[in-house]
Length: 144
Image 1 (cartoon, one colour):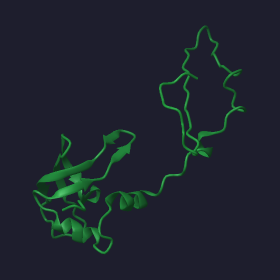
Image 2 (spheres, helix red, strand yellow; image 1 turned 60 degrees about the vertical axis):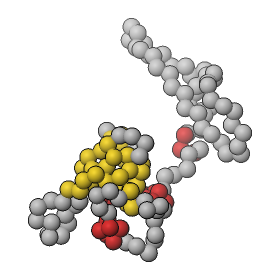
Image 3 (cartoon, rainbow, N blue to C red; image 1 turned 45 degrees about the horizontal axis):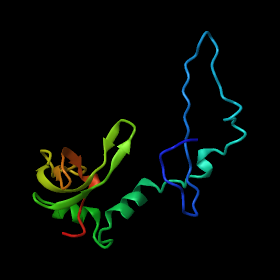
Image 4 (cartoon, rainbow, N blue to C red; image 1 turned 45 degrees about the vertical axis):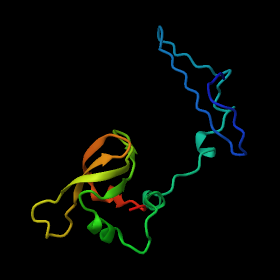
């Protein structure tokens, strides 16, 4: 297959996904079973490592003081704080997150009740803004 990627010089297998699209014409669908039979290729899952659970990915990404609980950290976040916003990339959501500064904090009325969720407006260091980011995706930056 022709491609524009560089040669894989590592010892780790790098999977390639090849997609063929063809329209059904006169009731017949085209299948290139000579070059691309299911018997010839391994399933992609055999090459790709399983993702860590969401909580583990969050811990790894945040790189914060493990002694401080997330509630303690969120209590310290104020307007002007430098924070790390977790990436939120799943079907229908394309929010890469990153490092930014808090520009506003939204606390719901009656926040004395348990279970309230703060939301933050963030201006990202590399450009862009995001409003109403739930506190579970926001943590203090290590450098602050």
